[in-house]
Length: 324
Image (cartoon, rainbow, N blue to C red; front, side):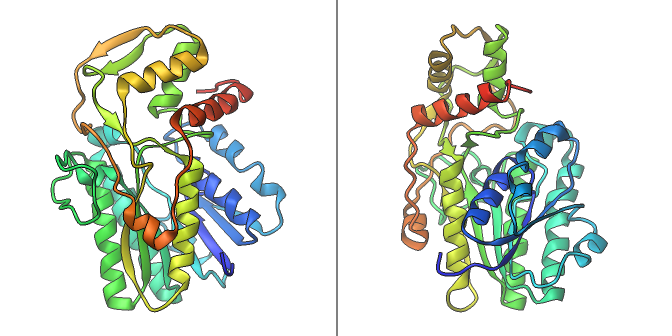
């Protein structure tokens, strides 16, 4: 990047957030990490994610909720950029708790945007999701595709966040890049996500929940490739006049559920035991990113082969005892 500054990273203790924090510190940014340490998964795991960052000069950590205006107003002065990763995550749990998801993801984003407006902070990276595309039949998914038909509350909240960001761009000249992440995996992955969950179950000789016939497909994206995209987006908002962009971050290839399971099982040298189950409400049949816009605007060039990324995940998983 051409220059650095003081950046707020929300959701800093999470899987992607902590990876972004570590990279920005390496690049010389001054990073303020905000996280509520909610109960979605064990807080000890989130706490471990920031162990490295806490040893680096230029990092400060604040525990608080983005929905709390008092917490936001008490943040240190001089913040120039915001990387907004805080959210209640997960498609299936959003079906059980739609009001909570709306509160955290929509109201929380509105509170953050209003705080930015009050403080005249003009540059924002917003973490959106490939889930906004729903069951789009056209592949690969392009940013120009219609997204009026989300099929889960989580997806709806992410689309709502994009629209709120556009409103603040239009009214107050914020520069905003909304990044649609495609099925992120790798070290520090949340325990509810399929690869980490399946690794634990396979290690323990338990059955893995196998939804459908195995033909559903995901564009699995290695976390460090995602971080590359975030860094590129920060460079983009540093330049020129106020902008609003929506950009896909994926690997531009798909892996079926059956292939994902067999790749993981082969890497672990186990025979998977499958518990065959029907497809779940809210799950899309495929995700597949057109990344030409990311390549053009961000210089984005994902490099991690799925098998290599799985090996790196398992090295981390084994090193950390495979905690769930």
